[in-house]
Structure formats: C-alpha cells, structure tokens
Length: 420
View 1 (cartoon, rainbow, N blue to C red):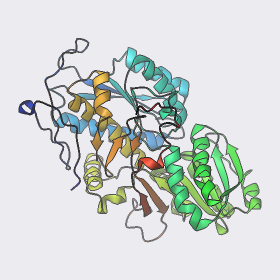
View 2 (view 1 turned 30 degrees about the vertical axis):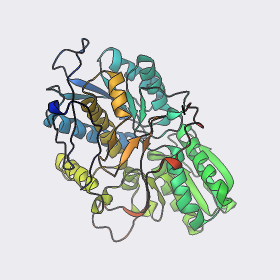
View 3 (view 1 turned 30 degrees about the horizontal axis):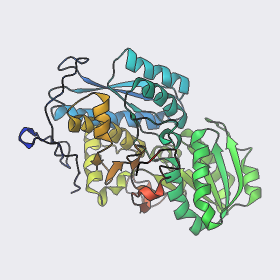
C-alpha cells in the first residue's frame, strides 16, 4: 500500500486524523484562524472552468467526474471543521476570452475560494492572469510550459498536469533511439503544439535527430488530406502528431487510412485514453505516446487500484481517463492543503500546497518550490488492437519514466531567481 507523506504541524495534542480513500491519510491540524470574509460553516467553493463544448469536451467531462469524486470524498470525511466543499463547473468553450470571463465571474460573483481546471495551454494562461491579479489559487490541470515561467507565475499559480517539455522529452528519449532520427511534426498551431515540438527537438539534439518539416494545422481541423502526401514524400522515420483531443483522433484516422504506417512510426506526445476510445483500435494500432496516467497501472500501483475502484463505484463501472485523474488530483491537492494549513485563506493554503507530498493515484508527487510544477512520472504507452480483455483495455504500458526534477527545465532557465 502506498504511503502519503504529509506536512507536519505543531501542537500534537490538538491533532485530528482524516481518513480519505483506501490509501489512508493522516493530517495534522492547528487551531483555526478566524476568517472574517467567510461565514462559519459556509461551503469551500472551488471554481472549475473547463471546455465542456468543443474539441476537448470528452476529456473535460471526465475531468468533471473525477473532480466531483474528490469533493465527495472530502465531504464524506467531514470536510474542514464541518465546512463542506462545493464544485462550481463552468464551460470555458475552449476560448481564452470566455475562460477569463467565466473565471472572473466565479471569483467576483460566486465568491469561490480557489480555481482548478482548464484544458488548453491558451485558456489556462488567461485564467491564470485573472487569478494571479486577484490573488486566488489556480491549480491548472492542462499541459503548458509557459504557466510556470516567471513572467506568468505567482505565489498562487500551481500546475498539477505534466508540461510539454517533460512529456515530449520522455517520449523522445524512448522513441528516437528505437525508430529513427528523421522526423516530421504535424502540429496544432497553438501553444500546446508549439511547446510539444520544442520539447521533442530539444530532447533530440543530443541524439542527432533531424526535423524534416513542422507542418502546422489550425485547432479543430477536420481534414488533414492536404498534408498527408507531403508527409509521405518526405519519407520520415517518425511522424509526431503534436495535437490533442478530436484533432488527434482525426489525424490518426486519416494517417492510417492514407497508409503512412507502412514506412513510418507514428507517435504522439500525449496519447489520450479518450482519443483512443473515440478513434478505435484500427486507427490507433501501433501508435505510441506519453500519458500522465493509465488505469491499467493498477496491477502494480496500489494507489491506482484504490482510485480506479472509487471511480468505478461512483460511475457505473467505467474507468478514469488520464485527464480525469488530473481533475481528481488537482482538486484533492487543494483540499488537502486546506486541511494542512488549517485555513482557507489563499496565502496559507498556497504555502501548504507548495509543501505537499502526495500519492493520490499514480505514485509519489510533489510541487517544485520555485515554480509549483508537480514533479511526477511519465508513462509511455502503445495502443492495442489485439488481446484486449475488455473495451477499457486499450494500451500496453511500455515504460515509466520516474519522477525526476532533472527532467524539467531548470528554475533559472524559467526566469526564477534562486536564493543561495
């Protein structure tokens, strides 16, 4: 059974113990600091802006399900001094302006205590701009390199998701030595795609990897036929689908139908469980990529088994997706920090969150002090088309790159001043 390391708070005579989930968590608490802005017993409100409509809707809906599970667990365990948590879900429509508007409403009108969410590199930066200005914690559950950089970061900015540098780097270190050095990128033309390509190229420099082309397509493209003859003519060893959600499904299907797999290995920085389910076994056959989580890890990781069982029980036997798990962890981490801080004011909760060491579903994690990036493992998976036990059994786990700060960009490179 995995053990969670929590922060230790003084005054042991007044400690209380909270049991949350099958892993068991011991939390130390000190006397509650009076908060004049919150009525005693009022709910702890967590705003949750995600794209319920648009190209990433399937992933967003699973984020909501898992986030609701974290809230239900917290409340079933007694909440915080009798105060229960409440999740306020809003549709950001995968639009940065809409995301900023919904976030502002959550803070100003709904009086949320914290924000968790986002499913786009662009929307999370607009959300963070609002929360940063208003000194409200935002725990992002979508990939981005920029959000941790000094220009966008603040004391209130946390990043639960993997970032493109870490994800693409892990996939590159696994795939380039095995499948070749001539690479074409089919890239969604926004921050996520650009940052993923940069991560692959940086990791490939020391291996002598050659970029034959970086072909960019608009977000939400339905037809990739114009790009495929050019890709085939370049004769790459590897085609990287640097896109996400419905874009990944459509490009994988069309590349397969065009016959690119005959001479080219197709990889994706993030091989989504929801995309594989939507696209099917044939379209994704042989495609490999990275992910933050795969439910099939439950055979070797007790925390994964505990999380999966809770999710199955809550939602009629289905299993959680990778981005769903991030929704769970993003909310649960903030609520755990409330307990550890023995407060709901954002400064104290931020200080507790940056000290948190946790194992909610995949193994040990912690937030790096300089930029609040969650340091965690990257899972390398390959899509299955045969010997599937059931409809959920879609990936083989090929490797797990262990959590290691050295695989992140340095704090200094990201603009953070590190005191000695």
